[in-house]
Each structure stands twice: as structure tokens, then as C-alpha cells.
Length: 143
Image (tube, rainbow, N blue to C red; front, side, top):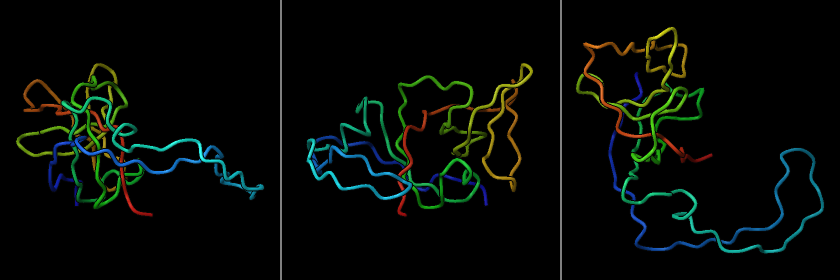
């Protein structure tokens, strides 16, 4: 199954949700003595959304971007104000269908690349009906 968009939601920053952010970093290797110093409160809206008027969230369906860390059911934060460049992950409408893929420019051609061996790249030619909606800035999923 190709990765498709289930829903599009506007990003809302009307409410502030501040969570504690600890000064100490958590090592991913061997445990170290705990520093339990609280640095500040972290507002997820401030962290995830840089331009609220150009940002929206989408829920994805499918498995074509798993190597990029995007999984079925994830929520993607998408910024329409960012320029869609080579190697960026974008939300695009291709021939009327929404999809999420990585832009790849190679030998004068442009492709929308999946991040799974099960799917083929989509070549964007002059005859392809394609519009990039925005650049994916974050993927949110349960662990």
C-alpha cells in the first residue's frame, strides 16, 4: 500500500501546552548519574510550529516512507512556507492524489522518491500534474 494522507488538520497555536524540559540530556548508551535540574517549560507549539499561518498537520496511511521514519498512522507537521528542495520530504498532489515522498533531483530530472524498497519513484515530467503543498518538518508517532 502506498503512503497516502488520511486527514489534513490546520495547526492551531491558540492554546499553549507547556511541559517540563530537563536540562540534562538522556544518553542513548550507558546510563549516567541523573541531573534532575529543570531547565524550563517546553511549549510543543513553539517547538514544532515556526509559521502557524502556513503550517498544517496530516495523518498518514501506508508504508512507503518507513526508512525515513514515517509510519502508518503518524502525524506529520507540514510547513507550506518552506521551499521544496532536493532531498526534502514533501506533501504533494500527483495526478489528483495526495502523497508524501522525498524530492530527488538527478541528471536534470525530478522524482518523488519513496523510502521503501516495495515502491517505485514517481518521475515528475512536464506532463505530470504535480503540486507540492509543503515540506514535512516533523513526524510524530508512538514508540
